[in-house]
Amino acid sequence: MPTFFPIIFVHGWGGPADIVRDFGAADERDPYVGWNTGRRYNDPNVELNFEGLVMRLVKDFGYYDASNDEELADFKAYLGMKPPTPSKASPPGSRELALHKSLWIFRYYEYNAESLQLSREIKRLLAEELTRCNYPVRDEGLSGIPYYAALLALKIEQIAHFTGHRLLDGKETPGLSLKKVALVAHSMGGLIARFAIQYNLFGAAENVARLMTMATPHGGARYASTANLFRFLPGLRDDDIQFFTPQWVTQFMGGQRPNPPLQTLSQTDVFCLVGTRHDDYSAARNLPRSDGIVDQNEAYLDDYPYAYVYNSHSGEHGIRENHDAYQSMRRFLFGDLYVRMLITDVEVNTGQKLRNSMLYFHYFIKPRGINAYLNELSERAENQPRPRTFPELKQRLMERPYIIYDGFADSGALVDRSARMSTGVSKSKKDLPHFQLEYTVFVADERVGGRALASGYKMVPLAIGARTLTLEDQVMKAKLRVEARRRD
Image (tube, rainbow, N blue to C red; front, side, top):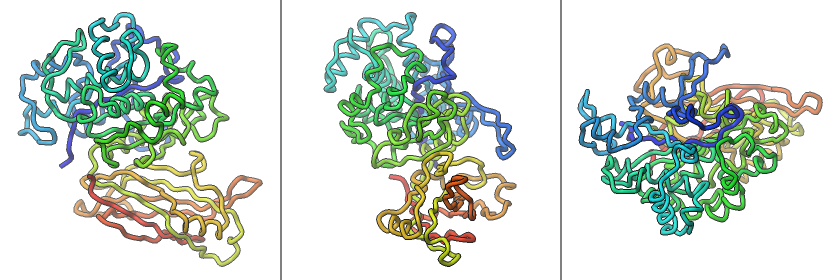
């Protein structure tokens, strides 16, 4: 049975879709701030509509949408229940289940709105806590990531502890005593979540079980600064912008190697999802390897798992608004397997005629029976391994393999009968979970950029341990190492 934790969604930057937003009264009434925006696809290859992250968690896992319940004490009194132990199921029909399977939206932008200015008492509390945790600041100087992180830590405290601080005036108030939460953060929200954990504000480090970031500039927003993309970020004050720079993120958070470290989170408790589509942003069309705002190379943490999806920073093809991100998120939050897939060797099947050609590859990883990519290495994503001759490719693989998946899987995930009966998919529910690996071989051509030579797919069973499988098509034969283990 999966371990369920209350989930806090942490809002991030805006984007072109947010240009008309002024974070006034209408936006204060929006409990989701983009976290439940779904899409209907006209692509014939996509069989399902995507309703939105919140809706899918409610439908698929029975989560309770608590995004409008601002005062947790009132929420607890309304439900009239005793909190269960995290991960323990309640009897069928019990309303206790709503506590540890609840969803919360942390809307930090609103605390800059004039109607939601915080009291002097709560600002003093936030400043004192930041100073106690070695980030000295005066209450009149509260701004940017440290300020929002302290507010987030208050929310975590209210959910995780038996008592917390009331947002109105900082006085003690009953909490939900749920011990642990999971954070899912978009863009700058990922830095906010990291800061709260790294500085252990209000005990946040001990109370966060999972941290997932989407399109977060963990190395600082280098492209956004250079291209003046901050004009797309409504609701931010001038004194917020300093916290986006690589200099500030490196000095106070350690950049992509967190310092202070994320000591309470293991390697498999953190996951970064990287967007790769930048064409939706006119100002970023000439900025390669980005999602339109964040450079791919600065959107992950060193030594922690991460994956690529062909989504933009926000908007119609935004990383939060699409099915790929949901499938990655559900496997990270609820999956019990940690999986790595690596190309370790390659041979040419067609003799010597390709030995001096420049070759490159595309790899796509899907869950079995679901038309969504958990990881994509491709030309359109601008992240496939660069073209190499066959001898160069062999040498590269001797030095280190190509990692084509570093993420999570759910051994309990099932697909419907029609999907299981399709070619190459396990027929029995008792069989091991599978990933579908799709791959294509290209030869670089100066005239057309690249010519596809061959393609294929492989159903990859996820047995515990390490095993080597063979990928073979008309021209190549490769060795695929699959490593799967139970999560920490």
